Length: 292
Image 1 (cartoon, one colour):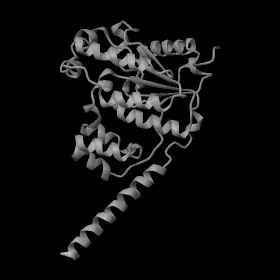
Image 2 (image 1 turned 120 degrees about the vertical axis):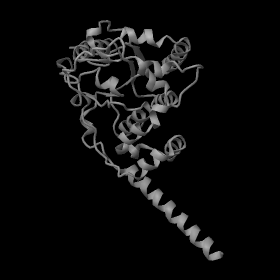
Image 3 (image 1 turned 120 degrees about the horizontal axis):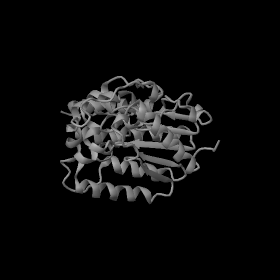
């Protein structure tokens, strides 16, 4: 019996050493070589960053801006990347774009597809993060843990998209995704994603952070039609605006014409051009970029 207990204890000790070694290796991996080139403005977020700000626009010829947004990235992962970025190098301005469902829908963080897509980001996670993910989706989190992490510096977001994307033919009817995101909201609550965003902003009080709500098609608001959601949104934004280092701009109704959207909440090439100009002008008025 004593021999069995000893073997079991030894097994768990060795397993603990293995896990600790794993986390130690991940913590010292530097996947941001060359990141010092991007010291002015860095944009992070999901597809709403990718399809909203064109870093290659001639407007930014005198500004070092890097769009590091990634499609279908939960705000949970965006915050992890942002923290790693700021630990590596302080930048003049961090721009965070978000989609509403990303801000308030925690489930989007740990569904299988989203976890699998982020296997090269596992070295951003603390033990607490692993526990959080495992509790909510143990099977997919285990698969993520045992997959080989591939550290790599993220490429420019704008190199991922086709600027000639066409206007969706069923623009007014492709709202099932929108309805699914919001119609089930029955009570006001603070999501884990939102709490992570607030905590991150408080963690870096000297860092200027600009948070953007990107353009939404008019049909989006008609489908939304949820008073409880409206109250939750207003309450959350007021909380963000209390932070001295955070500036929030709601661009959701800044572009009206259907011809500038590829679907209800993503711009097409036309819209990208227009919105990039809006962002540039706002940065100038806020004195985040030098005037020409």
